[in-house]
Length: 269
Image (cartoon, rainbow, N blue to C red):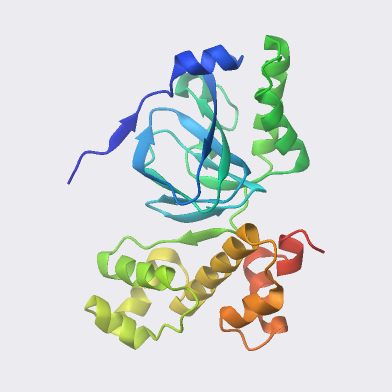
């Protein structure tokens, strides 16, 4: 197995020449084109990754996190992750040195990865941090505001958990490669060299979801991706493409996973 790439604190000379940030917090603004993949790597720092524009997908050993523009992802220090850019991205990343982060009262809640729902206030705070005219005092206040908002905003609606057991993981990746397909568990089990009973048991024990429920979450994640990257797609089109018998059936499944209807999620309601 190849050693995991450990990336250094990103181009600190460049960061310091463009942005004022408190000791222990580093700001990086970069744009990336659609289709780019940032291969698996890890950082010595924790990071909050936000796309001010565009949609990305972050994969960790625990699962796959879809990150549309109203979401950000928290990645703890030392966690392996890969990023796939599903659209042109305006990425804004905050890196937090561990000694600084461990001073946070709720540090224990920041030792695992999670997706953050970005409120209008959090959105503006992140963007304001990248204002080159900031004073040190203003930046300190913005960072404190961001940390307060971060603890209020965890949201697992766009998360698809991934099993670790090799056969189960292969089956999950087959489904994710074609989430709109009708995947029969018997055929899938044969493809990965096990029985349907074993595969069903593995899904339930590893990710606490039945195979059927997990496939539904994968389909809803595909719907969220489409809603986030195609402003012209209709709910009716999505329902048909994902194999739902009707728009109400699709909306009910979508609400079950995300707590909102597709229209509400897309901000069209």
